[in-house]
Length: 187
Image (cartoon, rainbow, N blue to C red; front, side):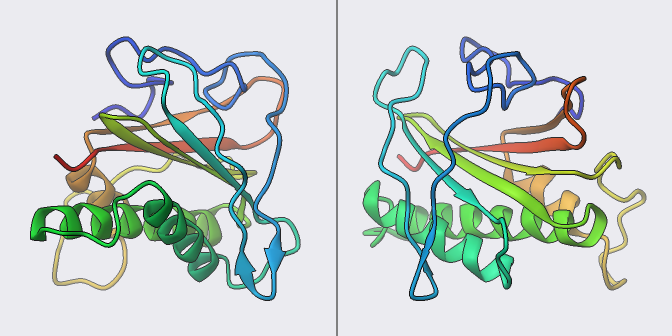
């Protein structure tokens, strides 16, 4: 687990959208609401060796109820990508892990950073990556020591336990940060 590396180890590399802290301009924002339900953006190919990655973006601008909105948006993406409906208990658990991580990252942005601005979900054959961008200055980290019996303070501990890796990216020219987390795709 790393909270400083801008992207996971391996050959994925920085993303040209600028979300990983590299220059490159703003990525298009989608996910407008339609009747109270998030409408996913059109699938976009993502850079990288897989070549068949799917990307969805959800803007939280002028939205309320952002945690359920983010979960619904993610659930729809999981249906579109074939994760749901799950045909095995392992696949169902993997989808629930993704939804839980989305909830935790968006909730942390609400509690500690004036709310989220944008969520990006990228899925390829091996990894699903969740990025939540906010304007906060804090540094997320699991509360140590972790005390399971106490209320609150479990979000980043949960993210750390469920994810392959996670981290925080800051851009020198933009206020705030992007907290990212990656989970393995179900087999």
